[in-house]
Image 1 (cartoon, rainbow, N blue to C red):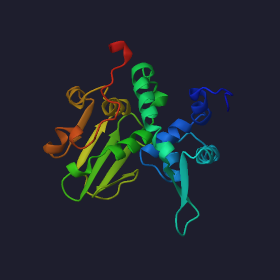
Image 2 (image 1 turned 60 degrees about the vertical axis):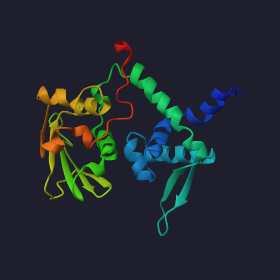
Image 3 (image 1 turned 180 degrees about the vertical axis):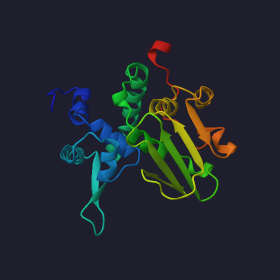
Image 4 (image 1 turned 90 degrees about the vertical axis):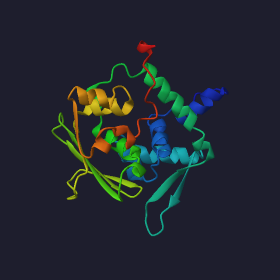
Length: 227
């Protein structure tokens, strides 16, 4: 879509205004490089549309695609122009926290996206030893109710099946409560006191979840109705 105007806002929107484009850029900024990683972060986009949007971003020189030796697939990386979209995304996110999250519907609560974000938020250096296993159980879900985060060194993976390893921390709650805590809308301390979340494990880790899981970068931005 082209707006046919010389205004720099219009020209920027010629590149960024198509559906899914900003979310794909979000995933690239958060470390996604492979097609399946980007699809996991934007699960409702079809593979055909994702391919189309990646080609458009490459044609606009916001990203480049590099082949993986010995494989047909490739990896996608932000160019300088792509990297400079980060302040724009941050501003949109901050605006969204203030003005667009007043009606957070159940359909907006995506457990797969939440676990991807939690995977990226683990402070691996704060977990003792070279390997840790954290099990999340969501009491209100019938499908995908159990997830494991496997931490090994600086790497973190998610698993939907029991990895057969000793669990260090058990965290049990409902999906909305976990989303609210990670987004900074509620405190871990309060939801634990309200018995909406239980943690089992070493007190040094269960006493302060935020010591090993970072909050969303948008946590702490109050909605407009609270200002």
